[in-house]
Structures are given as C-alpha cells and as structure tokens.
Image (cartoon, rainbow, N blue to C red; front, side, top):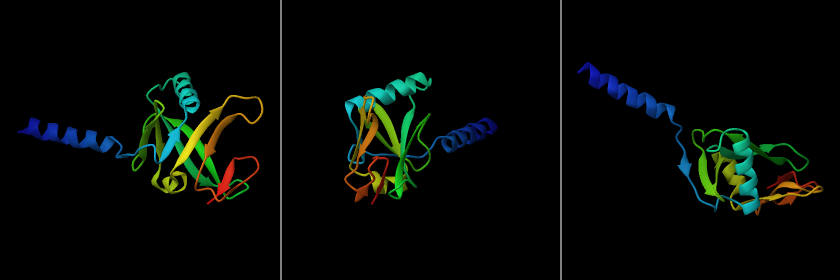
Length: 134
C-alpha cells in the first residue's frame, strides 16, 4: 500500500517538473534552411544539441518593439513549440501575437549579415531592421 502511494507521488512530481507547452506549426514561425543550419550549429557549440531557440518580442528599439532570441535547454510552461528546418523553436503566447506568419532567415555576410525576421505583422520597421511596430 505504501509503495503504491510513493509511486503515485513520484508520477505526480515528475509530471509537475515537466513543462506544459503546446505544439504549433510553421504558420506561427518558420526558419529558412540557412537559419536552421546556423541555429543547429550554435546549439551544438553550446553543448545542447536537443535545445530550443526562443523567439520573443519585447518592448524597445527605435520603433517600439524588438525581437529577442535566446538558446535554451527546453520549452517553458505555456510556450508554443514549432519544429522548422530541423530546429525546435519556442514562442511565448504574448509574443505569438506579434510573430505569427514570420520567417527567420540567416544571411552570412560581412555587411547586413546575421538573423533577419520577415514579419507580415510589422506596420513599420526601423532602418536597421532590429525593431518594428505593429
């Protein structure tokens, strides 16, 4: 009887430790091949090949909103998980309102290189391409 209670308690604790997230699709956010390759190599270099790319929208920048990207070990509670170009991407529900339909690309160039977001929800964007308004 006691062993059964301990087993049930362990199952509840394990379920509580696992983040609760939803699975979305590329209609939320899509990575191009070059972006997927770059993120995969960055995750591998950091020693977390099964990690995720977090894409978020935060206040700031010259147009009012800006993108924030971070590599993490796993999705967090309430995240939306999308697999695109071999990479797991997570977006929080608030940021999802701003990035739906976006495409993340990577350009390997000396000038104007790096990650680029093509966002159909952006009403305006600044000249540097780092921030936008919706």
